[in-house]
Amino acid sequence: MAVKKASKERLKISRFKLNALLDITISINANLPTGQLLSKYESILRNNLGIGKILVFKGSEKWECILNGGFPAKLEKSIDVGEHLLKFTDIAFVTDDPWFKGVDIIIPVYNNNVPLAYVLIGDIEEEGEGMSPVLKHLNFIQTISSIIIVAIENIRLFNESLRQEALKKELELAARMQKMLIPDNSRMPGNKKLAVNGFYFPHYEVGGDYYDCITLSETKTGFCIADVSGKGISAAILMSYFQASLRALFTFDADLSELIGKLNTVVNETAGGERFITLFVARYDQETGVLEYINAAHNPPVCYDTITGELIHLQTLCVGIGMLDKIPPVVTEKIRIKNYSKIVCYTDGLSDLPGENGREIGTKEIIRFIKNPDHAEKNILKMLKHLGIPDNNPHLFDDVSIIAIDLFR
Image (cartoon, rainbow, N blue to C red; front, side, top):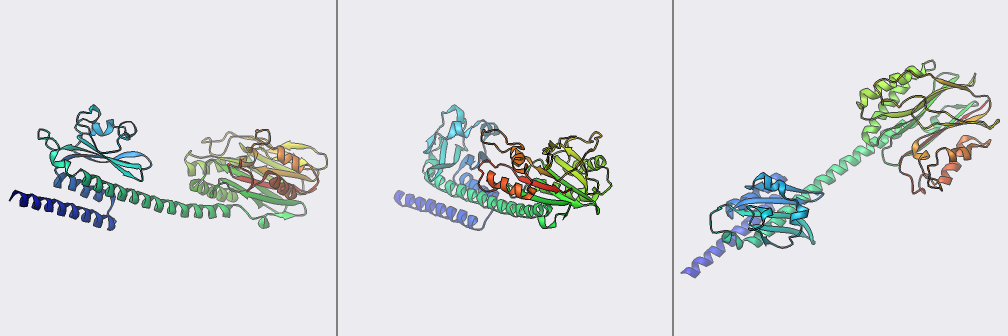
């Protein structure tokens, strides 16, 4: 009679375990969220197996407690997985371990020899006969824990892949937006007195560089180069606002100092002080040969007179756009172009590259390649080939943007 009763009890337990595994499997296949899966898991352990305390630490990118049923919060916070749990590779009894007060058994969950989780359980009846009712279910608990943890990790990975795919699409959209900001050379202003060519090599899908050249009147042409701090979608959006504002405000008779002030307001209102833009902006009068400019914390462009050999750097005159709430008054610098000259503007993705001596090249290579009577476009193409830009320079870590201007007199 006792044997028959024991047999029925074993059959009952087996059916329970099969039904529990079936319920969990159906729930997983139904794509239930992590919270509901953990709720079912906790119910099986606490309500059906009589386990009163459950603490589950799960690792992926970092270890975290994903379930605490019955244990005090201070125990959860006191356990350092790396220090206290990683040493357990098999089911362990820790009733007398002072680090795990109230914990009776630690069940590690592994997959391909990698620890995925640790399940800590304690008896619901503190004054009972110990954990004897649970001992016969330890392998089942480990199995069902493994199924749940792997399912939760798969949910995390799936959601991460969705997030990455969404981010990828956003980056592609931002990259197209960024590309639209950079004018094609075929659309650059050009005539017998002026030739402009740009070169743009983003290091990431979405860069933070921008250059432009605008016909302001029959005799005046404006050009600029800019670099926004940071990268990514927000940088591209800020630069799109900046481009639209610059094109709206930059006219043949605009005061460049006032232009800088207005652009500073635009950047502050758009970026809220979180980003700034370095900018070199200039206006050239083809009739008089006068070049007026302001350099707002940007890398100094190089100006080379092909007849006299004179070479000057168009130095910084004020802080970057968006660095301060209000830019102090700045005087527009003016120089007169007397002979055929070349101006090369660039971003720090070029000037910060290390040379043969390991130091930043600065404008060394620009000067080396423009000190001749050839047109600036030819000079820059030779320089880029020499530097292995964009494909053969292992030291590239930022966007490289260059705008080269030939001023014929």
